[in-house]
Image (tube, rainbow, N blue to C red; front, side, top):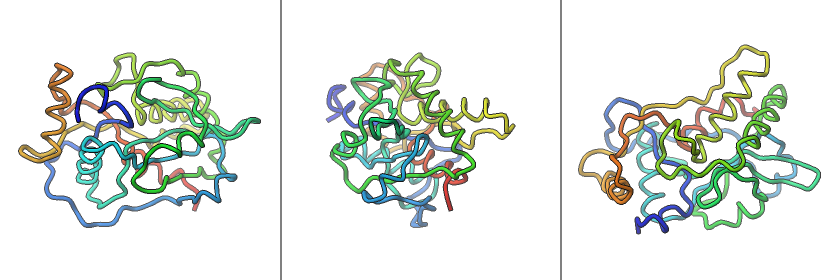
Length: 234
């Protein structure tokens, strides 16, 4: 299951946890930004975000489990995030994806991937449209960057939520408002000792011949989902 070829497919990014120790999974509900259905796609604009709960087996399960523990929520389970781009030719996303790196992909192709639950969308507030467009440009400027299946910062590669975090950091830094981006990195951890999730990550990194990067800064799709709420339409 955890060979490089199989684990890379559908992998959005590694889970991130705060420095405090994780306990059991909380049953508290996730605070959700407004979500669109398939009939709402025509209202998506550049800079909006799409979130997927991909079906990639043990790795996606481990990712969802530990990120939910991080935030003390029972969902949503998320393993991929991308930035929407609207153009004259239709809707695409800018994403970091295994095998292709940072690329522009038709939204329909993204939504056709095997998923465990429907895609979720976050639409920006009207006053943040310029920031969304700037984030889209910042992500597009990174097209061709290799995919980061090591999930490490500052290594010349990007995983999905790292791309989104960097693009929005750049957008807020240049929009003149003086407000910082709400998307932040946090120290990563990879499950409690002895847990099933921990075993998945230990195996994954052992096959890559690198240590499990506990404590290294990162951001997950669920982290983006929750931290981006201040940007969302009411």
